[in-house]
Image (cartoon, rainbow, N blue to C red; front, top):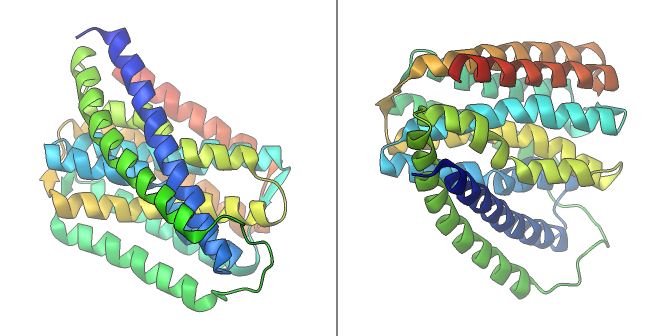
Length: 312
């Protein structure tokens, strides 16, 4: 298999994957806003789930094909990218990224604990169905807590003029595109791994991790203060937390022992360090400052460098 055409095909498929997710995302957010759902809740639950659909569908297709390692690499890589690259750049771009109100220090630490559960589940290289149930229950319980704490409905006049029927049609088209592109993305990524003689897990970490996070990266670039800032802050942490639920779903579909597990160890170590550093930053002043944003970017640079040196 020619490597360059395969890489080109993978990039095109990732683009289609993200565009499909973006279509669903904009439709769901539009519907939620028309119904007057709380802005933060849209960011943490609705936007986080829909922007994580690429990881979800890749997980389903990879597990169904018997290549869980590809999706595990994608999930862990995507989580590291969200907590370092995306949040780091957002803090630098906006001078700070505060966590207050409904998403204060306690909620951030709860989220980080759920994200850390990914490490606890993967640390032995085995994925048992009970661990899948544990991750899904952990995430579901936290969402129930967030919904119970927040004011779900808020009075707002900032409704879209688009009809609900149009938004629903767009979301259905987005889901169809997501299913098709996710299936092709998995098969193409496996082809690239074979062509490079590289474990699928590494392709998930380095290629799909950044590719499936493009919705969050776009949100980060568009975000400003006000409602969009609330959406962005909730979305970044919400997406990283939701990845634990995606891992739980993956395990339930296909419990397995990871092949080439040692390739995942550096990423798990860096994720553990990131969670620890992130906790200190939030506890210190409830804000990710611009300086701390640079620290997060440095951690991401270390992650990429270590993976490249160890695997290539």
